[in-house]
Length: 584
Image (cartoon, rainbow, N blue to C red):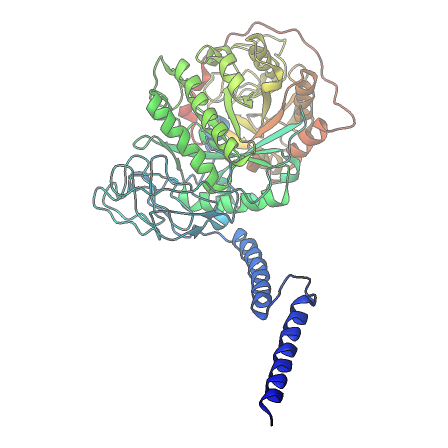
């Protein structure tokens, strides 16, 4: 073949190949540019699968509780409330910060691997640095190995760190503390579940649930959450060595918290708050409120606590500032001002967290219902700080008195009495007369009563001396006394409350009618809402249903109007300890 022919054939071949290449590049992709190559297509499919898998994993972890290990209790002891307490009666609020949601990721930059918070919520690290373990921290917040022991969940040292006293930590991530080792920096957790829906003005229904209720079989899953807007969990305590909030019954508390998180998932209106203090655990309030440094540390620990355990806020039940409360409580004259400063520190910490995750966190307090208590706090200042004050409008009379009397009369009895008189109406007016807005008051109502034994038959036992007395849950009154023909069922016209007399026994209590009357009074005065101490005292839900139906009702129970009366009361809250614990 001639050389010129060969050149021509070669040229044609090159031209054909060039034209084929140009044609392929110009032809539109069947995937519209989403995956131009097999490699690209494979990556797109894999990425989609990973995203779906990640969502499934997140959903799974939301239903798991990662806190399977129990930390050592403060000073090596676990406090378990296996019986009802007079603290029930005096109930208190806990200080907790915004509830963090479940299943979020907590990154540690110098403490180990990234961990998933799971159902127990996320841990942002301690107030001044600490260990992280599977997104959970011990709410004891003790310095690592304070007494040489092991920290089973990787405790955070709020004022010191990496096992400075020789104790080892079994936390799965890095061990760090601000004054005992390398610092662990944590990334603020991201909220993955929606915040609770807002509550309509004047429609708060708050209920206290006590940790020890579960020992009687009344677990959080049995709470009628659909009839509540706010659930207060009682109680957490105070660790004075670290100026932090701490679990009172770690093992049971963690179980209860898991069930409460489930309640929130199924009841979008429900806000949950950790109540701190109460009758038993107010011992160290005066100490942690005494200096700015201690207040700030405590406030930070409260925020950390609510993020870790999924609460929406903190409730303080300090019983009591300046004087009173359980024997052995620390008190200072400066408590009056320090209480305000403590609330302000917690509010500031909650506000800072709100800016981080764009949701609301709540701060509330419980307050006694008399002028003696109000003289020991800066009531208008604290009212401006908190979202609401839970007014403990009960225990107006009890076993600490000399005579059998009514626990929570709506209005003062007009007949002669051998002792002081007080009423629910008086308690509300005491706050209003001090300048507190009605929109900051939630009327607390008792789901329990008092039984006085050894009374005389005169006046059916009312105002009689007695030989013994104790508190009774409404459950016990309903099951053992209301259907007992030996007891007469009576009602006080002025007090608008029921009572029983029989067998030398006088019982003051509440029923659906008296609860409805109290709620109606709260509505007529424009209060923020109503509440109950405490839910496990009425497992039938009778009293809560009456309160809820009256508050949201189409019709309102008529309430008699009486003028405010002069009130002079003994300081009951200094004497109640002799009748602890609550019977029934």
